[in-house]
Each structure stands twice: as C-alpha cells, then as structure tokens.
Image (cartoon, rainbow, N blue to C red):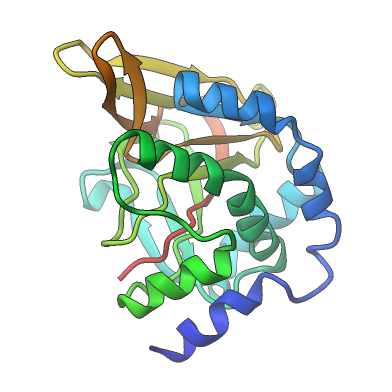
Length: 253
C-alpha cells in the first residue's frame, strides 16, 4: 500500500470547507432521488453547491498543484476538451462530498447488485471501501475537473478504472447554462437487450448534480430482472465555457 493509500481515507474529514456538506446532503429528498435512480438510472440533486463554491472549484483548474494528471480528450478519441484528475490530498470541498454522497448511495448500490445477482456488497462508509480499492492496487484518486469550450464534447463512455467499481457516480455542473455556455447537455444512454438505445438528456443549472449509474442497473421485466448497460457523455458546446466536477467513488490503478 502506498503512502497515498494510507492517508486518502482520512482526507475528506480535514479542514473547514467540509462544514455543512453532510447536513446539506442529508436535506436532499433521497426517497425521490432513489425512485428516479431506479426508474431512469439517474437523479438530479438540486443546489448541491452554491455559486461561490462552484467558482472556487472552477478556479482550481489553472493551478496544477491540485492535480495528478491532465487528459486532452482529442488525443485519445474521447471527444474534445480536457480534464484533470485531482491528486491527494483532495481539495476540502471535494473531500467532504465524496464520503457524504457515498453514504447515501451505497444502499442503492447494494440493492442493485442483489437484484442483478452480483455477489459484491459495499461497506457503509467510503473510508472502508477505499481501503478495499487500495489493497487491490487502485490507489490513484479519480475525482476530476472537466473544462470545455465551444466545439468541445465528451463521447459516451463509462468510468471503470479497475477491478473494484462503485456502481454510481455524481457529476456537478459548475457553470451556468445560458450565461457561461450554450449547448453542453449531460446525456445518458441505456441499452436494453434486443432493443435500441434509449437516450436521456438531463437539464442542470449551476450547482446542480446528477447521480447516475456507472455501468449497468437492474430493470424489472416480464420474465424477471435483467441488466441494462449505460453510458454517459456531454453534447457539443455551442458557445462559451463549461466546467464540471466529477465525483467518482472508486480509485484507479
């Protein structure tokens, strides 16, 4: 286990920026969010961050000391635009969001796996789950900050990264549609067996988040439960600049 692996689970509880995040997440209507996740594979979490918090995270992009790597999407066929993976220690706000959101989503993750016959369960705390990742060599943090400008887009994809995958993740829009950018809608597609793909466009405002399935989810059919495969992406930015922070709960090899 690396030095990062030893300290990573503790980072989310340090500093003052985390004050209020757990209470804010507790106040979300999780009954409705869970129903939306079960029905559509995604759920909007309104007003998760304030405009000032969105601006503070966006401002980090120009300071490489916060990041472990930068990816230019066009070089890898991922689309157009770029993103940076945060390094440990995570910024305090991101470090506070990760365990608090995980605690609300792990019940859904466990129920989905049980319904799909997947013999994997997730512990109640993110700290314990990260330990599982790190013991398997997945020690690199995966929260990331994405930056798009006019003409950029993100191809449909899945954020898997290794053997241990938490089946839900969260993306938070840091920019305001209509003011900072146009276009750039969050898109989710769902492939059901022997059917054409179903698209879902998720409208978000600045500070809103979308929780969604990383890979697959269960759907009740006439002959029992079956798995559907999901991918997500971002449509073309028509003008302006768009920033998003992605909160992924498993780490990478």
